[in-house]
Length: 560
Image (tube, rainbow, N blue to C red; front, side, top):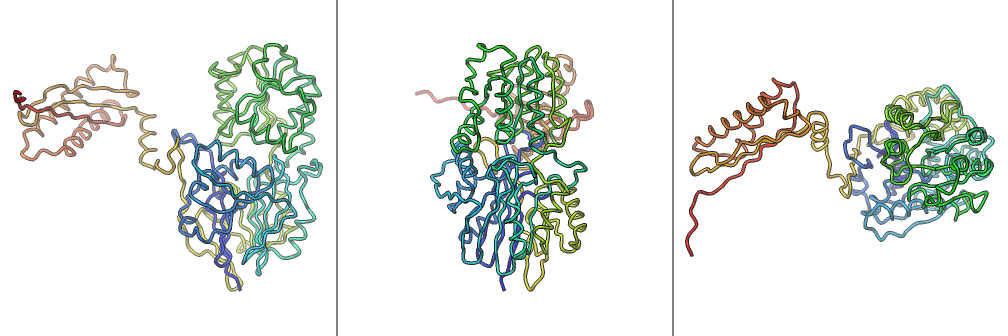
């Protein structure tokens, strides 16, 4: 009897950063390798990726990485993973090409080239498991679910999915194969929970295409379309609607151009007219009613780029009087305030805003009926809700109970929780390291809570610098104290505060110079303490206080 472990290293109780480990005896299979875009409180952080510590400890046991689709939440952490691991990577044709693009554009130094293209007919036999794939419907073609066949039954990971009975062939779910896997017996199902609590069902993508076309045909001004670069389905709908409404498409951003080129070359994206896409430098040659500007962002959310367009700081396009900004993506809940602020800026710039999600439920994630259908097709013994905040996972657990799966067979795991199946029963069995790894520029994991705390304090209360030069031998202050402040108070209106601060620093330094034992760290700490108490009493603010102490020598130079 095999011993099976399932370990989420990311993707549970959060949105994004999907990475799940399935261990079958001594073989370890990694499902997805995604990142998460930072919330506002992660000042300056570019991305958040999973902690690879457990994989580093077990690197010799890793059989491979298996990818479900080509979005950042499934492949975004791959460049950082491949910089340290040399294990084969498996994915569909488009997924692999987008993964290569992410690795190439990341700036990470790696010579990795062990990629393997799979499709729904591929079966990969390892010592302890047979890996198979099945087509799913998502907002990008070539999306796959993954089934690991073991002697104890299948472990199935859906990836991001939904059911759409009117989906085009490139996006259709293979219901027959899913049903066949279910008939074989499913031990555990790791299923997408992103929309588990939605009270509204998704509209079909055919209806979305009709809506986009209607907007294009009923607008006489220039249209700026905001979309996610890797949402190939939405880009296809924009291309089709632009062609039918007699407009040309202008693409902003290098990343979108590269993704579109890859998708066209692989025949995953079709151009209804070879002359549909026009370079940005020819924008002035067309009238406003002939123009569609397709805008995305390199950080997953196009809203921030719209913000720059509205404030006149975009390199290529700025919003002008009469423009329609058409947002065809559903921003994350964390972006709601930013969306409202950006919408206000667009109107101030003379444009108007229309959002596709105002009129209909548009998502690439399964709604409750979809989730119940997936469970009924697969009939799993155990359910492990993944890909969502805790409330979404809990809603998924309730749905599982509705289709007859007892609550004791549903595991709402946290990142790093180890779920073990042995002796005919699944149970929680400890934890492994699974925190967040911050990516900031070229630094990976070098930013921790202390740095983030300092950045937060700088953003809230600013910085207060006290500079003083001393001569320890003569026990005197040679220069200063000088006070420099940024983001704390307006200096010209706070003269008394600055002068009092100088006196406090002067008193602390002079007292320390009279001590028999002079200690640099003690002096700096006393300066921080004294200034901190005074500044808080006067302003109720806590700026970062930075003492800068310099020393000069009183010895005379010898003559040559």
